[in-house]
Image (cartoon, rainbow over all chains, first blue to last red):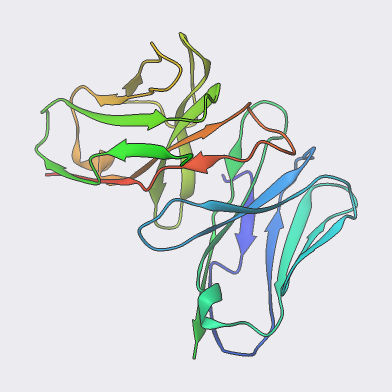
Length: 109
Length: 115
């Protein structure tokens, strides 16, 4: 059983489309992080959300932390081929750091 | 340049032959960790270390050992590798376990194949 479930697991879209990736848990997190991983490299931090209901924007990426601090979403507007990669949410519910199952995104030119 | 360095990048070995994957960070981070990444399972933590001489088991520690004799180094040891340890391994470090301003910094990974 995964503590952090992400959906969808795979996503293939055309350039210019919008998409949303979800990260869900039954546990409460003090904060959640989102990472992006490109082939052959380690994950790189995109953002940390801390407050329930918080929304953060990073250019075309919008991150939201659920009010109950059990879930988060990542929305990408007008996806570009450079957005292709594996997106991972991660957090510590109080005892250990966990990663989500990951969403593999492919943006087709 | 701040970085986490893992070696080797690729390793093919046979069942039972002891191996060590090295990890070194130059950021004076206290927290270091090892993960394995498998399709459909995401990143799973093997071991972590809060500081020198302090290590603890993660989710999947069986078959692995670690040591933290110096702050910068955190080697992963497979005493008797088996084919189910074939995976992509990542070392990571952070200034503390988890915090708003303490992201995990990852190495570039070690792809291990055990035949």
